[in-house]
Image 1 (cartoon, rainbow, N blue to C red):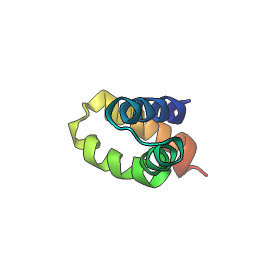
Image 2: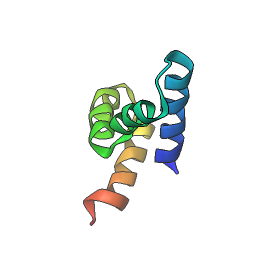
Image 3: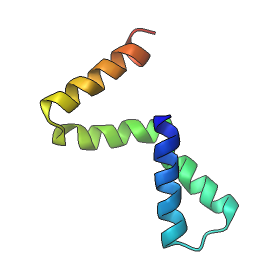
Image 4: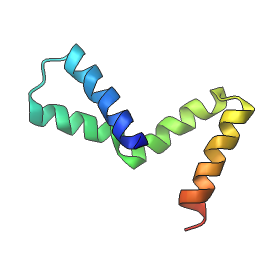
Length: 68
């Protein structure tokens, strides 16, 4: 669900700020929403998170990434 929400947010931003056609819009959105780019974005915002938010991120990582 998180990826869907993020995708909708980014898609709305592009729709409101550009006149890209559907195929080009999808390409741009997918490039931003992909897992590789999300990891890069997390590296940027992680230092700005408080302790509770950082612990929440670590909990999710342990559940879905680190234990697989």
